Image (cartoon, rainbow, N blue to C red):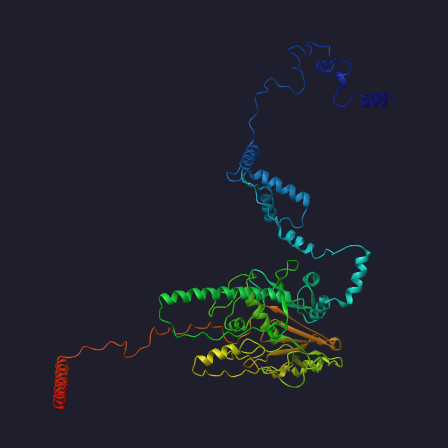
Length: 582
């Protein structure tokens, strides 16, 4: 019992206090009991016996070598950079905090990228007093441009009903259906761009009196591309615009005639020598809805931008476009610097290339189109034959395998362009009645007659196209060999790279996506300028003679003296005869 009592009493003693001090008052207890002890809190001696106090607090012990090395390393890391003003310590701290916040995978492999991101986030431009120029982001500009495509023309239930009624008669083509077929052959644009073009064609159809419309294709350029739409106006609607063009041309002609009259007046005062050069006769352009100007073309750089109508093409533009090769810039008013000089700007050159591409690559299945009965079998004077056709209601679709195996099952449904630059040949030397009457008064030598050009007729099979040296002009294949029962017949043009066509059943279409250049097996060589003409005709009148010798001069002098003596003798004889008569 004594042992247990002793252990219990010992257990009641607080830890850290000995049994000998139990029941006694220590100096440290007075510190926690105000009012007791030799010193009060406000007295100077208070705190001398406080635990942990030191009489020499200002004396700090010298650090050990380990602590000294740590302090030196931290001081080095805290040094700020002269360029950025940031210390390595702060940079590492920001990197660690970024890694702990984001917790990327394999941070040791991307530590350099994390360091670069931290530096970029810390970068700030210097203070500038100039106002910053507001720059729109390209994505925002595209969104603003496409915004107009997705806006409806009107609202309300009535407008929806009217649109549903007018849908069967709309000239708007089903671009997405065409995109579906070309996509099976791996040809065309993205579906997003196709849909934007679809909406842009809808705007074109609603803002112009168009009878037929078709997505012709896309011509690539250096700075911007051209989206091309082929349209045909309603009858009578295009006459107003054509009249405006004629008025402009007449104004230009009147101005040139006025200048010629002024030049004639100046020539009467001082007539310089007239040159013998005669310019070649001007070949007239084809009228609207005929030949190379059968269709009208609109272009825009991006779907959503305004459509621009291209001018009519002239034979001189087509002829010169065959002699040059220029990349498009995407600006219709850009000049064409070339030799031979091109008569127009980039818009005229684009229109000429579209006419050439259409004449060579617009094809259709054999029998889909036929000639009308009204035209008859007689060919026109120009030798081009029929220039129009109509859809054959009794057309029977050709199988895909037959269209792939033989090019004779495909035909050209656009007229061929002659070397003259027209689809129908004209004689430029043939003059009107008034000019013939003037020529009768002024007798002129007969001029040589020009030989009439004759091209292949309309709806000519592709099998008659000329080869490109050893390369065929067309390549035909099916869209798939794994499922032939649902395959398409696809044709690739080797002469105009970028022209494609497909056909399946009664459905076919053509498209061109390229740079607008014709393929040439040889490298393109620009035409050389002609040789320099002679300044004057070389003859005895202008040729300088050599100086005579002394013998020649004496002989000439003797001959002259003999001639004078003979003349004098004749005069004397005549005088004697007169005297005898008297």
